[in-house]
Image 1 (cartoon, helix red, strand yellow):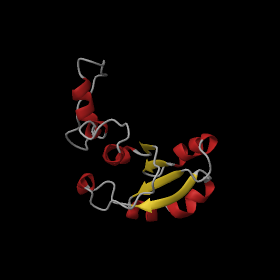
Image 2 (cartoon, one colour):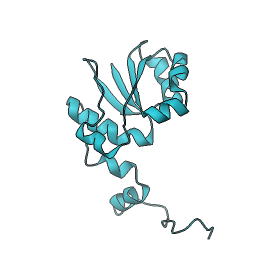
Image 3 (cartoon, rainbow, N blue to C red):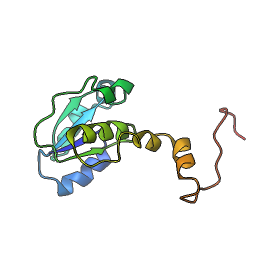
Image 4 (cartoon, rainbow, N blue to C red):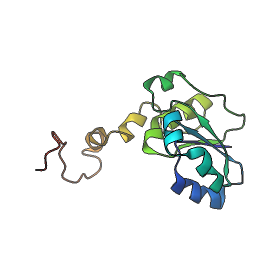
Length: 136
């Protein structure tokens, strides 16, 4: 069983081509699941076993808040969305599976932090943080 944090129709289309039917569990925020009509949209993806709702974007999720019962036999955890990266890292660590690590996960959700972290190691395009909504 594969665990995907955050619903991604694009990623699920790709997984439909390679994952067995019913082999993916999607975790999604309750309000996001409702707003994006995830329950009805997963029917187009044979690889999905079900959607479980969990507060994957909440800061306390890392401490186990709102963690749903997970089935036995989860082989992999992957983020389906950018906001699912930290939850995927937390769940992979909790399940003893490979992942980017809980400490590294926030870097992938913060572009400024990512650029500062990689400065000197990976060439960066010229950039500057926005300080207002006004166009320069």
